[in-house]
Each structure stands twice: as C-alpha cells, then as structure tokens.
Image 1 (spheres, rainbow, N blue to C red):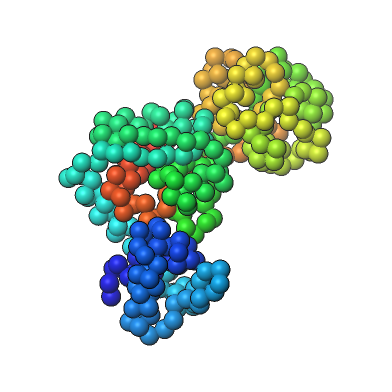
Image 2: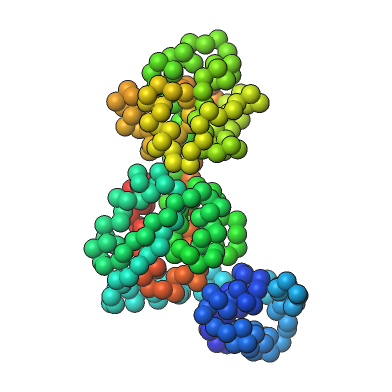
Length: 296
C-alpha cells in the first residue's frame, strides 16, 4: 500500500475536501481523486461519500485514520528532522501567536534557529486567528493558549502558567481591605484580554464571585499594554504569571488574594501535520519543543 496514497487519504480525511487536500499536498485534484480511488480498490471498501460541499468519511475511513494518522505524522516528522540535520535549513519560517508570549517567552528560544540560517517572520493574533493562519497555510507554526479542537491541526503543551489577579499596591490595598470583594472589583476599573473576559471569568468562577456587573475599561490582546497601565495605578486584571512575576517581586504589582485559588493557563505549540514535510518546519518545531520544555 503506497505511503503517498496514505498521506493523500489522511489529508482528504482531515480537510473533508478533495480541493483543499490538493492545495495542501501541491497535487492536482484528479491526482488526489486517483490516489483515493486506488486506496479504495486496495482496501475493498469506499472511504468517502462525495457531496457537493466536499466529502464525508465512511466508517472504514474513520478506522483507517485512527490506525495510521498519528503514526504517519510522526514518521514524516522524524524523516524531515533527520534531513534537517544533514541539509541546509536556511529559509523563512512563518510564526504566529499571542504578542505577549512571543515577546516574553518565545523570543528567547529563537537564537538556535536564527544561527542555523532560518529567517523568522512573526505574526500576532488571538487563538482563532492562529488556527486560521495555520489551516490556510499562511504560517508554519503557532502558539496559542486555546486547546486545539480542529482535526486538521496538531498541538503539544509547552508551558503552564498560573493566572494571577493583580493591581498596583494602592489599588490592591483598597480591594483587599474592602468588606465585599465582588463590590470592590466592580468599583475599580478592569482591564481584559477580550470582551468575553476569558482570563478573568475563569478566576471569577473558580472563586465563586459574581461577574454580571464587570465591564472592562480597557480591552487589549497584548497584555503588556495592560501591565503598563496597572503599574501606573489604573485598575486590576488577571495576568499570566510570567508577565507579572518580576513586577510583583519589585512591588510594582501586588497579587490580589484569591478566596479559593488561582487558575492555570496552558500554552500549546500548534502545526498542521502537512507542514512537517518541510524539513525546516520539522527542525524548528523540534528545536522549540525542546527549548520551551527546558524553559518550564
């Protein structure tokens, strides 16, 4: 059974589309259709139902994808990584992730890639933007604090950070001394990552507080901007610990005590499996996984 046909099958299975798979594989649509047809003959069972909007996997396709999908990804990644050790990896790597994480954490891990001749192009955005850039092939690797649920992408957890409620010493003192914590939080301005209060709501829920009256005064997807405002004495927020550890140590920020406890924020390195066939991407992925693992 041809490995090329198996790779084509996995890409069609993940994309649910012949045309999308052909773009990812750099093949013509007739070639992709022929690969699938040949595989169906070899297996003796249909793998997809053709629809006007794409294809739907059959039970046989689900079984085959479960058996070979991850194994094929690992084999191709290992082969690409082996090639990278003996070949020139110079070229451009497109990376996308949260701006503050790229600045505070990722940038420290780029030197080995840059010294190997890889030119890095960094793009910033929230979780959905990261996923779309990877799925559409605009970027090679990404980092997000959102778990991957799209079957077209793979991920590995690279870091866990506590999410801490913080404010300047004066603001924190007012909140801590208040008789009603919820009232104190609604009285002070709040700074949030987005209007859904994704970081803050997790802390609010865990600590059994009320959030109906919490409306952000500032919304910014670069948490470093929030950090500057907090240090200047404006409002409170919930930040990843790696963004406020030094500021707490220097007494520029103070952690607001949590009645129940703090929450954890997980970060993931994300990629489309097809991207690992490029040995530059496979090499960069392995280098970053190891470097960020050591960083923890």
